[in-house]
Image (cartoon, rainbow, N blue to C red; front, side, top):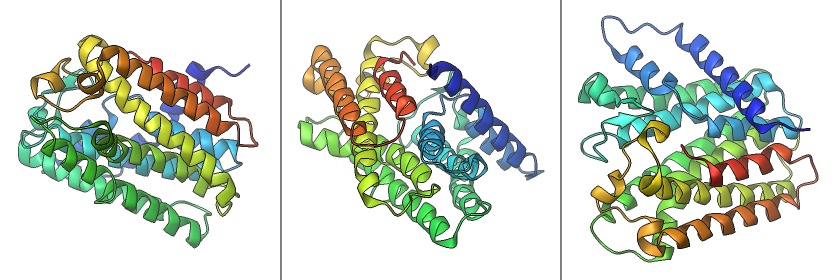
Length: 296
């Protein structure tokens, strides 16, 4: 029987070891840049995005050694985004994963540079994926670039900032979070798909992306719920920060019960999408349940 918790822990250990090994080769002394990069990248985290890459690629017959590089690229982009999101000019957060944020632990300039360097590291490592066709490497780079830039994560963050202190409707809120949170989760799943022998099968890609879109939005809905009823010792973040900043959230728009119903609706959509995937989707189904039920 498939055991999600054990699988998640094993894949967390795998990506953490891979990243640790890669950063053992980087020395920026006397600059603190490399240490700040490692601080933002290796200081905890659920590793949901690498899990998506590994689970999808493994399901489709990709080599785990190739998925290491794809997962590392995704997580490096995620880490850079968190470092920058926490900056005073953005969300001005002081706590991340239960520890001081990067600009508090180091300084603001170093945090900005650490995020910049993690972004370039992500694309560099994708090009180093062993025994992968050039066509697939290019597709991996394109996938991550599109998901993290002006048509994805950066756009979402910008929309989120301009939505503060004003009322937005549900369509506007979903646009924010399909970009800010969902785009990179979709890219993580697609990275696993692109490393597999089925990378050119558009009919298989479609239900996988419907699944990823649903859990990407569900992830943000649950984040919004935890900002209200979560505990800082579990979430590793300052509970109530979104409320204090008057951010647009699902509970603010739909009410707390309405937000919980939205999460469950997205969970059902994710499972329905997997019904059209002719492989063993146990890991992806378990991840969807984890996303909407997590407490951190």
